[in-house]
Length: 298
Image (cartoon, rainbow, N blue to C red):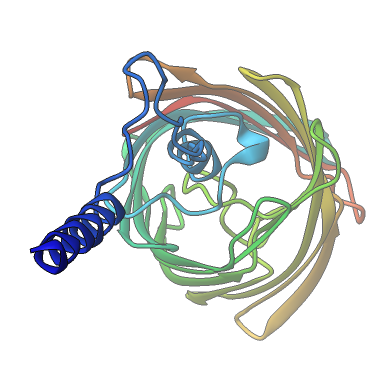
């Protein structure tokens, strides 16, 4: 009987030890706060700012984002003065230009421009289509390749048409948060041709042949987040041949741009004003261009 009691006592102690070992750990008191999750980096705002086309001009990429749309309207006013043996002859003409761009895919834009002469003769003057690919996107150094194809109509007593081809490499190098070195332009309503154009090479084929070599350079100053100033110059060499007669002309153009940028609820509006001087170095032929316009982009 004593032996049976010993067996029962030992078995009870063994079962109790096993049960105690399998008990779950006591949960922490309800007042103990749960550990806070690790902070995550908010990249949404930064990504939007990096690829935004609504902000200051100095930070914008050269091409619109995929699906982006831009429309532009401008009134170019040209005044030309030519020295003749009987004195200086001057004339003024006004035009209207319409343009648009579309982001086909990342870093690739397609655009078009249509211009009409309003005075002295109301007539079609220019039609241009282009493509631009930003092969070096970035926040500090940006570069793109541009191809312009168009038709130019010259009215008056010697009416003529010409087929135009332009090749350019616009780029932007941000020197400081306020200044950038620029060359060429990614926009459509810009000087297109052999005199002070933004393309590096220009070819015109028609009743006369024109070949232009341009070296455009400039400085962009972002004086305010909603306002910037550009000063553009360079060197242009123009070769023209017609009827077996060839001429070569050299120009040092000078352009001043005042550009604003407004964000109206997701719609960007860029009013601008440009004063351009052709700067002929061969003879007195003063060609001044005033450009008043605005760009709207979505």
